[in-house]
Length: 328
Image (tube, one colour):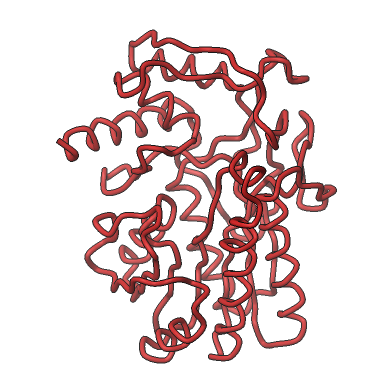
């Protein structure tokens, strides 16, 4: 049997492939390389170039490779872009996911893991959000992901498909073995951008919004190391294969850091006092989102191994230095 990883050439997907291959799984990557990189795919995985919404292609892969589980990462993830180009997000996230789910059902795939987002909660405030908190996404990105969650629930009620939804908080860092990391030069992740500024790859970086109702006026987020995130996926896959019921869980550490705190950590670790420019808020950005994460620990026995902001920053800086040498 094999695991199909959509978006496996991207940031999180490439780490998932490494985790699965390290465990001896047979892995097939499906990616259109619109934002991913073929060199980021581990050599132990098979690669198919294509769109996750192509039902004929997906059905053929499932049949040929004997796929029993799908882990779905492919999609668009930039909140401000979703506000200015919502149709792109409903096409790449919602419509693609709908077709992928249908291909899975038609082909008899029983296990489906979906990469969702804390953006489904909207402007949650400073209190950590539980899975039962009100769902009020403030951007087309968040709504496009929530629509897929709803589709999965409806489909699982009608077909023999068990699914797991992980609502990510802010994913950061890189593989401790330096095998993968956030490789897109135009990525908007805060720690990625700050690391680029520290290494002189950007002349400066911006703080988007200093008047949020938070302790220092800047946005507060729960930052999770990408290696801990993919470990949660691996545990979730085991849970589903062992007969676990469909489930939705937060995946975060339960502690938030403000934008100013993260920038200070990057400056401290790098030893570089790079320029920071205060700018207006971006459309769709909530003030604060922090996870309540008891459920994933209790159900899956998930125990984070990299819950440390300094370690996350060090990993990100190390990866940026590697990319600088690789791209010369």
